[in-house]
Length: 140
Image (cartoon, rainbow, N blue to C red; front, side):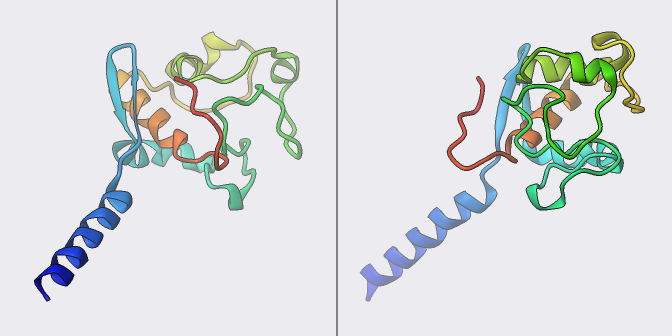
């Protein structure tokens, strides 16, 4: 009976580690946390959704955005500068983008306030990394 109880407790601890596991990433020496990023992403949610099932809003879907070519999601009408952009989103580029969208890509239509705090940017990026295709490699 004791063995069954120990196995049961072990299983519960293992399952709870999956539920509470936090996606993290380090960008420019700042460790981002997806759990904190969930809160920091609140103002972004006005225009963007990272969940696959929600699709586009006023801004393009951010589902599996890291690793995607900028301006390439079907079903969204991108500004001309994004249509002509020729880069793939990496955590480092996303960091520069959300720090200052107007400087990063002049002429874009994003209407957000820049995120100047490096911790908040790292947290938002860690949060976005949770939303990706199964098996898709995370860009380091």
